[in-house]
Length: 115
Length: 111
Image 1: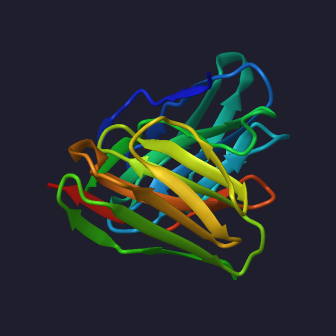
Image 2: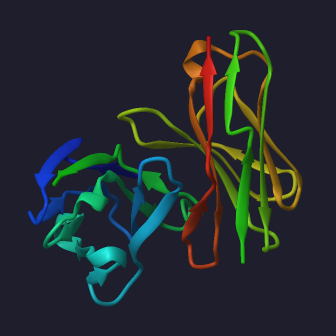
C-alpha cells in the first residue's frame, strides 16, 4: 500500500532561517505529489503540486519543492521563513490508477516561526 | 467559483449517540467527494470517497458510514458514537486535475 512519511513532526525556526521539510513516499509508479498547509484556524490549502515536467516546482508564498524520483522524495523548502509561515504542513501523494481518486497524507509537520 | 460547506462546525456528543455530518459543494457538478479525519499527530486519514450519487468506497472499517443522496451532498454518519470517533472531520472535493479542495471541517468531541 502507498504511504507517505514526514520526518519532522515539529520544527521551530527563527525568522529568516531556511526551511526544509522532508517527505518520502512509497510507490513505484506514476505519482502526483502535493504539499498542503493549514494555518491556525483556517482551511487546509494547497501550497504546491507536482504532476509532471520540471521536478522543481514553485508554489505560493515563496515555497518550492523538489521531486527526486530516485529517492522517492518531495521535500518542501523556503529560503527565508516568516512568522506568518507558522502552520502545519502536510505532504500527500495521489498514486496510480487504482488509487487515482485518493490522496494519501503524511502525519504532518508543525512549524513554529519565532520573530 | 466553487465552495464547500460543512456543518455543524463543532459538535459535542455523548458516547452511544448517533451522528450526522453534512458536506455540500457549490459551483461544480459530479464532483468526487471525500471524508477525512484529522487526529493530532496523525495527519489526515481517508475514511470514504464517492465518485457519484449512491457510490461510496470505504477506506477504513470502523464505526462510521457515508452516503451521497445528491450529486453535491455527502453525509457522514454513525449509529452509535465511540470515544475514539472524536476528531476533526474534513470534507473535500476533487478537480479534474486531481487537486483536492477542503472544507472548513467539523470538530467532533465524544464524551
